Each structure stands twice: as C-alpha cells, then as structure tokens.
Amino acid sequence: MADPEMLRTRFVRALEGVRGPAGGPDPVPYAENLLARWQEPQRRYHTAEHLTAVLDRVDELQRYARDPDVVRLAAWFHDAVYLPDRSENEERSARLAERALPEAGVPDGTVAEVARLVRLTVTHDPADDDPDGQVLCDADLAVLAAPPSAYAAYTAAVREEYHFVPNEAFRTGRAAILRQLLDLPRLFRTPHGAAEWEATARYNLASELEMLSLPGVDPS
Image 1 (cartoon, one colour):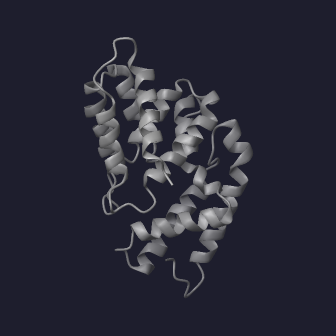
Image 2 (cartoon, rainbow, N blue to C red):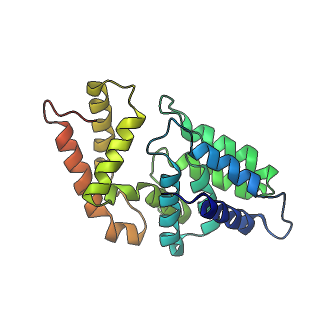
C-alpha cells in the first residue's frame, strides 16, 4: 500500500532538490494536489501504488541518471492526468507540469526537462544519450518484470481500468500493445534494467500474449 505521508516527503525532497537556493512557495499543497490526482476513483493500475513503485525503481536506478530529482518529478507527473478513455493523458500530464512547476519555483529549463520526460512515456523509447529518459522509462516499465503473481495482479488492474471496453476489443488492443513492446530491440536501457529485468519481462509479455490468443479465454 502507498504511504501518503512518505509520498509527500519524497515529493518535497525532489522539488527542493531542483528549485535551488531561491526556494519557493510551500511544496506541500503541490504534493497534496498530485496525490489527490493519483487517488482518483477511475484508476485501478495507475494509482498511488504505481507511483510509489516507479519512485522506488528510480531510486534503484538513480546512479545512471544525470539528475535523479528531475526524474523523480517526472515520475510524479507522468500519469498525473489519467482518464482511461482518453488518449492524450501524457500530453495533458506534461502540460500540468508546465503550469504547476514554475509556480512552485522550478527554473524554466528544469520545467522543460520534466515535461520532456513525461512526454517520453508515450513511446518508452529514450535515445542512447538520454540517461534521465532511460531511468524514467525503465522505472515505469519495471512492472513487466514482476514475479508471476504480481504480473497477474498488474494485468487484472489494467483490465479493470478498461472495464468499459468489450472483451474482444480489449483482447485485440492489448495484444497489439504487447507485440509493440516485444518488437522493441530493448525494453530496458539502463545496465541494471537490461541485466535484471529484460528476460523476465519478455517472458511475461510473451506468456500474456499467448494467453490472449487462446479462444474462449476471458482477458478479465
């Protein structure tokens, strides 16, 4: 379970880490606003638990990042706007960062970098010379390398978020996403992700895709 108090503390540390000696307004209201978004009722997978998991993975991978606190802020914003029936959630989340972070005292260049990283989670395909993008994308995709029971819980939560989609349409759309991921030359770009998560993630994705191809199997 996500710990709201700990999440607030983590946000405050990340924000203070990027806005420099000039400081800014009280960061707690910004943390509260973001936490409220991550706890909205339409969410089943993209919840505060997912945010916590991504932040934990960023901490695990921080040695590869150019600026870990910028990546942490991008993690906070990457699904801050999330409506399962909308396709532009990442763009709207990036725009939220572009509005909120200057008000919170973050320099313009850092704001632009956070927004860039948020938009990168559309494709999860960072460049070879983009260590912060690699860390964020690996952290976001780390769930794909979860143990079997956790991976099953993840897929079930995703199905719940898309409860309004008929089974056959969901099966087709989910299978397309899985194939797209499997077609990537690398799912994980950091050395740790490549060594520790790649093989398990590909096994999980291939197994889920095989299950979706079986006739009569309910993806829910």
